Image (cartoon, rainbow, N blue to C red; front, side, top):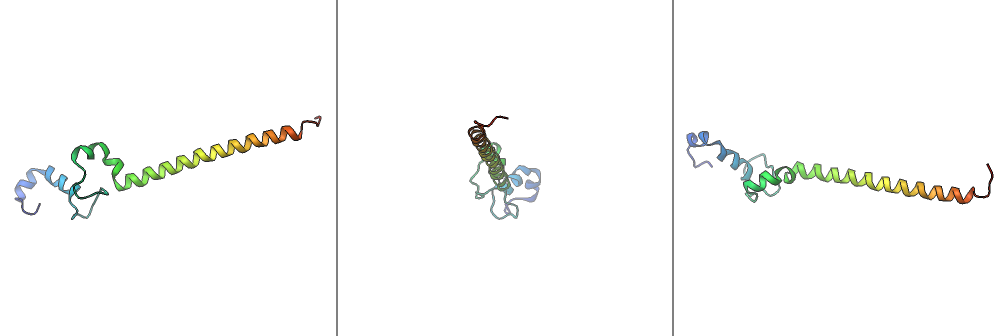
Length: 95
C-alpha cells in the first residue's frame, strides 16, 4: 500500500481497512490465517468466530459448558445410585 497516492488512500479508506485485515506487515493481526486467506464475504460471515480472541472465547465457552454438562450428569448418576443403595439397605427397617 505504500506505492499508492496518500490523497487517494485518504479518500478511499476501504483500501486501508482491507489492507489492515489482510496484510501480514501490520502490528494488529486479527486473523489466524493472515495472508489474505479470508475474503470479504468470509470475514462478514465468520470474522468473529475465526478471530484469535473468538476462538479462545468459543473454546473456553465449550469447555465450561462441557464441564457443567458432565458435572450435572455425574451428580445425577451418583444421586440415583445413592437412592438405590438406600432403598436396599433400609428395606427391612421400620421407621
